[in-house]
Image 1 (tube, helix red, strand yellow):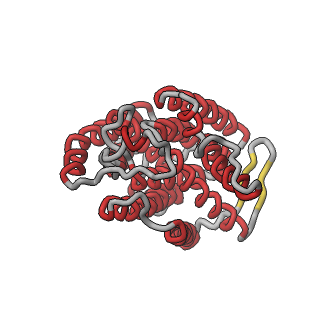
Image 2: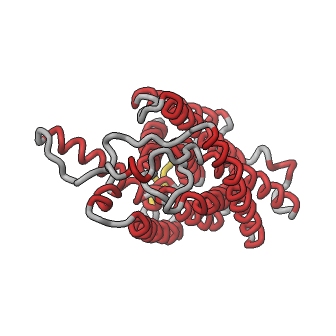
Image 3: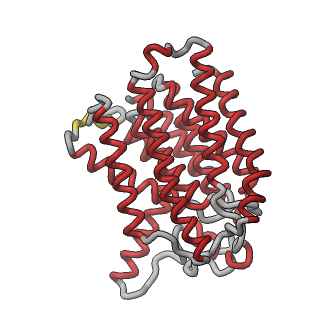
Length: 339
């Protein structure tokens, strides 16, 4: 994928997403779709974030879709993809099925957000309802890939070799998707955090997919990266809009679509280190709480709230987590040479 195409796709995503802020945010205010802060979250969030328009993820979802479509059109116009062979290509199907999976996750997030704002409560779908919906989406994603003829169950470990998991591949990767989608959702806790970390992740995978010649997935990565950057114009502290579960679950789907679609499942876990860390602290906290009869290992989880309680400003936390995401992204890119 050439630099000019990258720049064009990114520009379209940034501009469309940023401009949508002038339409979507006032509309969300008129509809009174404001954020309801969880009781278990930091108490000061009720003063600073209560009522901020939510579901803002719609902005970068539309921006990413527009840029993705435009990017494919640009590649076709340059003769870099042949229209007659295009639809049947496995890479094309992986990019399209990945985008559709992310959109399905976004719909689940939308239902969750909608229930919250309409009922004026801090809980939407129950945890079990979310899990059931997510499992159905994951099952549909892998079923579609198998039906398209994409039946590979091999995982590649950089510099070590390959391992065929047979049918256990779908169970293993299904659990990985389930974990990561919810991990990305947990990372959306303070202004600009999830958008910044995902911007870095998708930029890393733009490089990885380009190196491995997954052209369509590279276009998808650039489109979402641009969408995240356009959204940060409105979401960076102090946020004018919050992405909500609509946006964070879409991004979680994209994170998985890029990693699994490119056959870089192990590298995906490296690049997603910040998300994994965030969710892991929640799991550890819950287990420690139950085993010790009510004691806490961390001040608050996800871990970014511990930094808040320790007195860190939101911008400083976002900067730290972005640096960690960038380190993870560089490591993931370097590991690509071992495939």
